[in-house]
Image 1: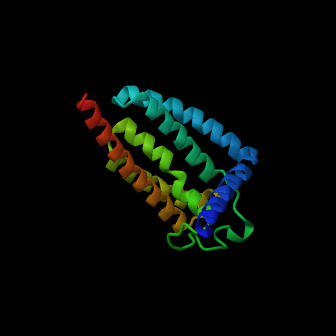
Image 2: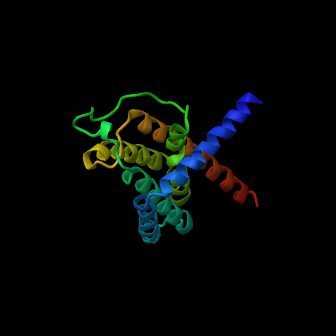
Image 3: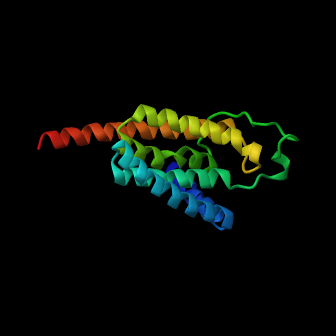
Amino acid sequence: MGEGFSVVLNVWSVVGEIGRALENPLIAGGLLVGAVVLGLGAGFAARRFGWRPVPAVFAGIFLGVVLGVTLSRAVPDWARWPAHEFCHVNGFSLNGSGELLNALLFVPLVWCAVLATRRPLAVAVSAVALSASIEVVQPLIGRGLCETQDFLNNSAGAVAAAAAAAGYVVLRDRAVAHR
């Protein structure tokens, strides 16, 4: 019972953290604008490249969410670069709501992108590269803190989502083929 209760508390703190983030008009506006613009862009890209349109639009929306969340945060004064190290080096961890959020951040984007494109390896590599790019850009524009843990957690979630989505696509294709 103790471990199950701990999981419930951790999930509840994640929900609270999301709510607090959305109280910031910059984050909420960035999420909305980014999701709409990138969702529409993904719809056009789907037509152009022959992707499945519905998951492509959702992938675009979730890309807007990822960029809105990661590039619209204020940095605490103690963490401003160059007074602070450029990137805080720490390891993979799921111990805490922020860490869990980072592991889950890319999951909807990657899942939908794999369903749209049917290219799980390309999607996973792109998501890992996007996470690395975000971590490098954040201190340069003063909109977040570069941490290797964020990169590792984002990447682990993205790779797991790509593998799960690839498995789902294979199983769905087999089920359709047997009909």
